[in-house]
Image 1 (cartoon, rainbow, N blue to C red):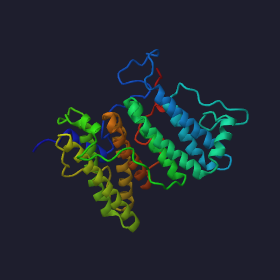
Image 2: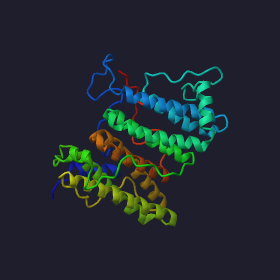
Image 3: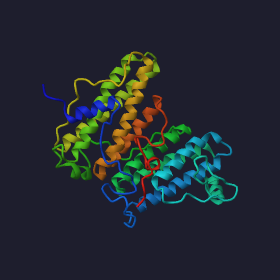
Image 4: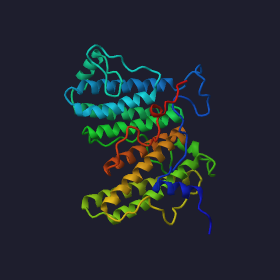
Length: 346
């Protein structure tokens, strides 16, 4: 019998507790392989980082304007403060004016003038939800201009912003960052993948993502068989259909690039026994959470024209993970962030 391939192990990792995809996970503060102590080298990400920081400061000011009337927003505000720290630990947060104080995260609040201006623009929780969603979408516009590591962080923070918008009551469908991949790929996508028939080329990350979707489709077959509630069964069918569609999209992209899509394995080992509805729900949350990691890494691993495809998949899995009761996180798909690891800034 032929031994399992690397991608079979990667897909197994989706269902178990290990990683499913390995990609660039360096801090967005420096390019992979650059000397950590090179503090004099210009930062090519500076324009992108500055735009991201400005948008984050506007969100912080909006939260600060609403917190006196809606203190329950504090956890979301703390997430945004963590986003700011991860985007650039070297750039000071806005300096508080007398009376504005600091948040429980230690990040200074917006100035009184900024908060007053934002309060006039964002007077309600609904408007703040809209601002979160708009900011999340704007972050995706910079994916192509960012380094791989910063693009990965932007995609994660964008997904968090959509989760915030949903938590704030925004039910508007999220706009796709780019058309779904198909056999008739755009000229830019075709140019970047037309010569990638081997696993050593840019097709390899998409093969890994395809393997992860094969595992998710298998997992949802188990989930659906254990659920008894009609609402949950409907949600499981919807999730299964979404993963089947994503699987088919990666297959079309690979075939259009001249690569042979890897087939699904005969079966996958589950991370824990699934014998009832409760454990089935946990498996669904586990599957989606692991997929956020797969797609966050994919953002950094693929050519820039295809980063939005991975970012869309990250956002969708983050939303489904929330639906299935996964633990909240400020950084969907990122196990370690610059704010947590204390990676130095060049």
